Image (cartoon, rainbow, N blue to C red; front, side, top):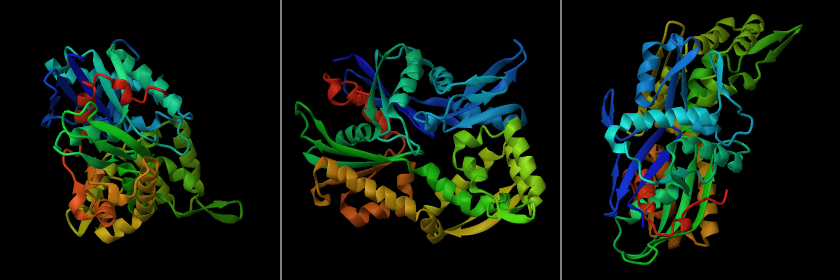
Amino acid sequence: MPNGSAGIDFGTTNSVVALSGADQAASMVEFAAPNGVDSVFRSALCFWQDEAPRGALAHEAGPWAIAEFLDFPQGSRFIQSFKSVAANPLFDAAPLFEKRMRFEDLGQVFLRHLVEHAGDALADLPERVVVGRPVRYVGARPDPALARQRYDAMFAMLEREVHYVYEPIGAAYSFASRLTDPATLLVADFGGGTSDFSVVRVEAPGATQRCVPLGSAGVGIAGDRFDFRIMDKLVLPQLGKGGTYRSFDKVLEIPDGHFTDFGDWSRLALMRNRRTLEELARLQRSATDKAAIGRMIAVVEHELGYPLYDAVSSLKRTLSGTEAAMFRFESEDMSIEAEVSRGQFEDWIAPDLARIAETVDTALTRAGLEANAIDHVFLTGGSSLIPAVRALFTARFGEDRIRSGGELTSIAHGLALIGQEANLAEWTMDEE
């Protein structure tokens, strides 16, 4: 049995690290962030050009990246949710001023800052590191083998023995530490990019193998998709979506492809380049509503993506606690204010909830179980707090079987505990 292990939940929106020692307990690593001590490290990067040496890039990560970007948005490049391109074969490299950085390059910069900001907590990293991975990666045709190669290259900088475990399995192991009796557990993990589900049989404390994975399934729908539904309904019509342009003697609808990048933070953050801006300028010249396309150009040129999505996320969180809320966004180039009811939001995400329900069915089928065989349903991840998401599970399993807690930390906690297992191969996804 190892002397210690680290569990890393590298998330689309947030990342969390936990450490486990020989006493079989796990604790969260805390970061003295600009706004106070926190165990959650935002999965964000900010780059800017360094004067010396000429052409070099300076960078920051986590909440420090956000602070740097807000101080100097015009002179920096802000990247968030870059995990979402891990399995995308069409993603080659992110253009950052005169440099191009691959996924693994971005990942190593991110990890380096994460370790530095952890201070003494990660100064002597344990020899065994367990990293969470989605059951299904984001994208229409994700390539898990490619994601594995990129993850390997990213985490190689830690110079440690790295193993991969499904993220909901990590959450299941964390939840199992609360149980004193045998049970069959369904974990529903709602991250920023994916929603993953695992069915686990939990044995009584002292069993040779405490947890036995029975079946898993995942779908590339989660918090980011919910955010985009709000963006699509409230913001994009202000930027020209649904509008028209003139082509010779015809009036045609502006193709949705011009707005696709607004649905993915990893692409939206990279739209500020000469080719894209020239294309948008051509569209503006032929558009019926030139002002609307002008607003879209302003969003790209002035790096308004972060504050726009911040306003969107704020609305989503507020609607989890109230029946209606105001969406407000104000800048020099555009102003949007609209009241949104929880019912409207739930209508917008209804197709996504249906896909999530189907994926839960798939996990149960792979486990060979019916819904009535599940003793506990553990909901974790930020989007598990959305009432419509929770209602999906209460309707299926009953309120008395729903459990929650540690929405942002349970995965890392469980991964660190799994790292203490003598036979780690029973848990890992090292075959890819």
